[in-house]
Length: 473
Picture 1: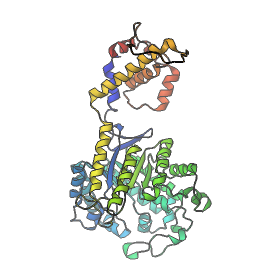
Picture 2: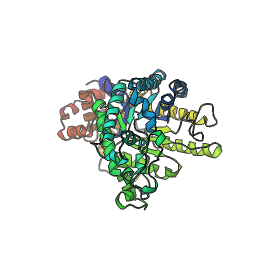
Picture 3: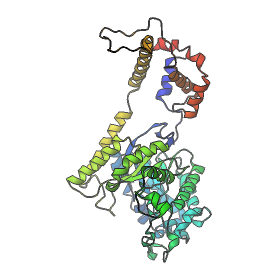
């Protein structure tokens, strides 16, 4: 084995990486390699043209986002109210032509999209004439509509480079198992297509939403097996576990918090979704650590601060720094160019426009941390391996020996007069590299690593690494 082939394996992903974002072994990948980025919510990019077909202002919005280096946008991929789905039910060709315009515009400006397919929880049940508890019934009309819409949307856009992932809805977990749920039933607005009244059957539970999430992910994976699937949940309420199991507002333990985070993002959903605002910053680190233990990448689907002034700016910048410092794979600001929430809306030409610039600068820092020239990477890998081999073999004569005072190494010159070889302290890396080269795969599953180590199938090859060492020197 020469050095060049395995260096190429280290620096390149599997050939023909999937479109969009994918999840593997707890990492978020784009183009086959680990990815981090901060985008925005463009909530009504589609809704505005669905309400008024001549409104294609989303195109200018995507242009502005691209200009500011904003890599992706999360958006509502239906109407909000049942009445806003009238065109879909009467003329699907026209409906999807409008949605085509949004996707093609994002493609043109090279902005990624995460469509949220069922944003408002009661919309689909109201549309098909069922109570909201039918989200928990895979045989319901609600699920039948969900599966049909998933098939239509995913098959239509799965070959688009603009589509980064698929999201179920928005913050369903916050409505689940509320001790005072009867006081917080969904809105009744018949002229917008809702049910004429509400009752106990419109109350959500965690079990019902988890059923919906699982069925959604299965439906998506029927047509797109590589892109990420997200629930769109917020961070669990401080009392989520006790709400579910005891019907109280008592505060959960850290273990219960982690259990709810995992449970509300159930397999085959392959990400952990949270939304972070001022009232949940104290649990943000917990969520990051729990997601790593669960083994799924964390997506902050919403974050932000409302209003104007120096205090708002300070809080926003603090939250942005936190997202960056915690190495959160994906996060999206709430909200870009949304007239319905002026105190939250961020535009390049309004007083909150500094947030776009701040995100652009954060993305540049992230890219600098993630991207280095190939020759620099090659040199760093070579130096790291050299340092490990030299340190191991130069130190070998002193193994299991103790000297009270450190020695004088001012005149020390590293060298291997008897040649280089591996032993139990270094051969694992060569096993890994050998299997990486054999399988042409950068990110090996842990089962493959353990199996190769146990079998020591590369033992004879490990003893032949002298050729590689000579090339390194």
